[in-house]
Each structure stands twice: as C-alpha cells, then as structure tokens.
Image (cartoon, rainbow, N blue to C red):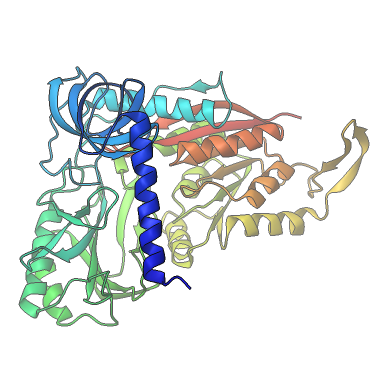
Length: 503
C-alpha cells in the first residue's frame, strides 16, 4: 500500500504539473512583470486589468491606472498581481492617509478618492441587483456619503501577538491572513484607541502576560475590544482572553480609569480554537458593564456583546431612511427581525401602534428591554430566539391555521391570514440580517403573512439581491433601494430596500 507521505508528494506534483499546464496555455507565469491598464474593479476592491485577453486582479490598483504589475498567482484564464510601478496614475487615485494601508486588510479603498469610492459602491449594489437578483429597472437612489470619511468607527477589535523580536504588537490582520500588521494609528478609528492600546501593552509587559498564539493555542490575551460612544464620550475596554481570570486586573483598571470617558472595563472568556472573537462569558471589573450612546433623540445602552452600528453619523441617516420607507401612520403592527439591542425597533415605536423585536443573543434582548425602559417606550416588546423560528411560531399561534378562502384562483386555493381584526398580522416587517442574509424559513413566513411593506436593511448587497429575487417571485414588488456608505475606505456598503405587497 502506498504510504501517506508518498501519496502527498504525488498529489503535490500533480497540482504543480496542472499549474504549469495552465501557465503554458495562458502565457502568463508567476513572478512575471507585465504592463496593464486597470479597466474595472472587483467587488473586493481589486483593480481588474487585462494582458492579451488574460484577466488580472491587482491589489491597490484604481480604474484608470496604467501600471507595471507582478504576477503572484497564475490560473488558466485569470491571475492575481501586485502593483510594482505606476506608469500613469488614474485621475481617481488618492494618496492613502495611513502608511499601513497596503499591507493591512482593514481598508481596501484608501488609494481611491472618496468620490470614486462612492461611485464604486453604488455600482456594486446595481451590479448585484442585476446579476444576482435579475432586476434591470429598479430605482437605486444616489448613495448617501459622509462629509468626513475618517475616524468614524465607534468600535474596534485589535488582535494581539508578538513580532519577530518578541515585542507585543496590536493592529489588524493583513489581507487573507492571520498575520498582525502593527498600526500605530488607525485612521478610521477614534484617536483615543492609541492611548488605550499603549496602556494595555504596558500592563501586559509589566505583568509578564503573554499574547495568544493561535497555532499553539497558548498565551492569554487574544483581542482588545474598544467601544466609544460618540454622543457621550463614554468608553468601554474588554480584553478577550484564553483563560478564566486576568492577573493583576486591579492594575489594569487603575491605569485605564485615568483615560477620560472610561466607563467600563472587563474581560471576556474565549478558550476555544476558533476565529470567533467573543466567548459567552464576560466579567466586569470596573463600571456598570455598558456605555450609553444616542441616535437622534434616543439613548442606548451598549454591552461588550451588543450589536450596534459602527458609524454613528451614518446610522442616524440609515434609520431615518428605514423609517421613511416604513411609512408608518400610527396604527401599524411592526416586526423588527434581527433587532440587536432594539435600535431600529425603538426608532419605529414612536410612529407605530406596536413593535415586536426578535434577536438570538439573550444579552442583546436584555439591552433592548432596558433601552425601551430608558426611553420610556411602552409599545415595544422583545423576544429571544432565531427570527426564522420566532416569527413562524407566533404566526401560527396568533393567526391559527390559515383558512382556505372560498375564492379560488387558477393556481389553486388561496391562503388568507385569520387574525382577530381580519387583517394581516404584521402591517410592516423590518429585517436587518447578518451578511449571510435571511433564512429561507423566515422568507417563506414573510410571504405567507404578506405585509403591506417590507423594509430590508442589508450589509451585503449580494445576499440582499438573492433574497429580493425570491420575494419578488412570490408576489412582492421592489420599489427602490437606498445605498448608504457606513464603511468609508472599505468595500462594505449598507442598503435599505423597500418592497410592497399588492393583492
């Protein structure tokens, strides 16, 4: 029997031979330097150029650049390259404000002017709607940009490691790796982060506390989570650790409490071999365990594990647009699915008869209920659970089995919701799912309920387009889509879509 080592060698040789054949067919080889003109951008922010019909994806390139690039990976019909020399810069090219912009995986678009970034994101949304959703004539409103696209983030999670000299370093992961790039200052985060990171590193060095090594699954401090409330200036620091306790925690608290605005200090326990940052248990060492921020006239308590939009300026614009699309008159029953700590729910409560929020994270629902009380809102109720389980169960319990209408159409018998008032059990539904989009069971339930309006808030226009395609095949009409730049300098873009259902 062939031993495992020999088998691996044969497999590796086979892959190498296949790569060589692909290279021969394309005429492009790894480490080759070629000249190309960047004609388009990928959705991940890479410039797209061609050499004799061969497609190249070039990191840090901008549409309009003419450049020398070095091939780093060659496939049969496409390859990846890095910028070597700009021969003719694009009119849309900008000098990155951050010296670590190229190696750091955080900001993909700093080499592009902000106006060009907005065009890129608007086109990205349109392309997804057309290619994935099949929408060719939908109204995509002009993207809502920022006056100042820097220092906007109210949250940062810094991985901790050692450099080659053994020094503790914090920063962000390089693109597509888990190698930490030291970033003395992050230009999309708040400047106070720099001082906090310095204090935590000094504490670790004094106390001999080792950073976490994910390969060995040893060391203590994995990440440093910092949140700062834009409206109040309150700050929270939480160390994510591979252990059950934090040595000399009182000394860390003493040094961090000197930072103006420091409100809460704690640590979160995550002892798993995982890429997930936060564990389930958080221990508060100092303060109430939360910070308070405001969006418009509403106040929100935010804990370490709470979901809260990272861009406070744009969040208010996003929620105002969601409220506008919901078009509430005061008598509606509204469901807010994936509600987090109740931000959108409470925004809507002032205009609706009743709002129900659903979120899978128990601590977030606890925060949502606290936030309703904090803002003296009595017509908002919150449920812990998966949206794709809570809404269907409520629908069946509230409406009973859908009765069969006497009127039949050509496709068979038509289901009619059997609520107490004879109307639909949800006039308006808001969904704000994670990047993977909505669960199919949830979409099926929404189709059965047939709300008058459905407002879909999305951080991933690809899964948004997929879900919209399904909903519109089942009777909804996509009225319009509003992109909002929540993540300046990155490829991320938020959207609000309005769908209506007409019998």
